[in-house]
Length: 141
Image (cartoon, rainbow, N blue to C red; front, top):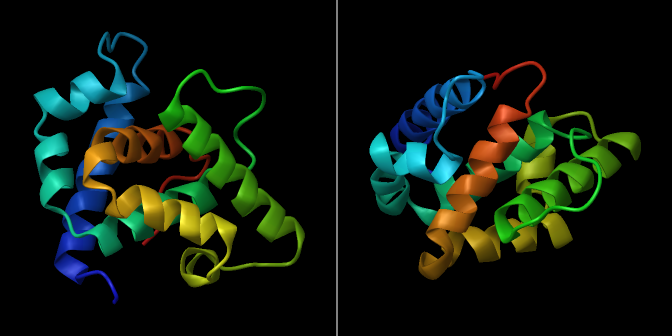
């Protein structure tokens, strides 16, 4: 099932806004604190799982190659894995974000599992925000 377009754009806009705030050196909040304070966690809870999966994979594609070394928590481990999977796909010749986000493979199954798990919504949101913060060229339409 494809994500609903309004759901996708609304949630993506909120993620971009939060990621922009997280890039400000004076921002004292963690990604999760900012998401809770700004209502993004509540929006994420009401966003369809297909949309959460798509946003997670789109963010990974745009942040590919941005992570090095070991991650210290689950959200960072997921973000790192997905960014590395996107980087590997690009090095193997994949050129479009949509192909990465919709091609079924290990990266897709990891993102699907995370996005559909209602108990790990905070982890999937922080992973997506972390990827959004590490995007080098922003989040193209």
